[in-house]
View 1 (tube, rainbow, N blue to C red):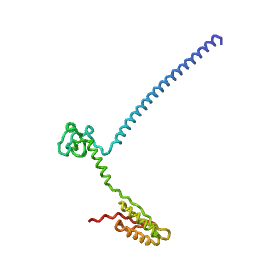
View 2: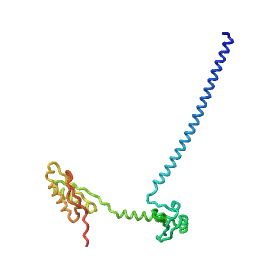
View 3: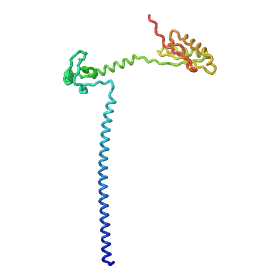
View 4: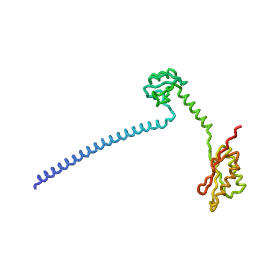
Length: 239
């Protein structure tokens, strides 16, 4: 091989190598462009998903924070036709929802849906803010008048000393005077289970000591090693 042939061969190999490298470079650039495009599309999709989740979460929170006692008013009412009552429950008549809203607006009040399951649904033209205030006030007054009865437990035993017995009786009288019930419990230890009549005697003595201030709801009951009786406050005698 002459020097000229050798140089031509080297030139052709170098040219082929350069062409191959350029192809790889263009291919890599194309792949990078595609990957960049996919990444941008992925970021956009992720951002859109976050936006949708935020919107749905906001709607759910708005629904969950709404008081269950709240009624639909004004524009929230979607019924095409309603029966309208006045502030004093007087019959106004059956109207289209648009006319009912206009009627309430002209009277300076709100249109409140009070019976949604009726045919047609029933609405009242009232001041909704005042209505809620009066409703909450009535509920607070009802809670104040509500009496919560608690059950206070008093521990007894078959061999209780007289002084301890009297202490338990005084405790029970105080509980009954407060309007609470008293549950007297006798626990049987060891061989005392073979003499449950001793427990019944202690409970009968305890019940007799509370005569006039408490009344037994039922007879003593035995549950395992425990015998108990529940005593409720005695009702005051009518004069």
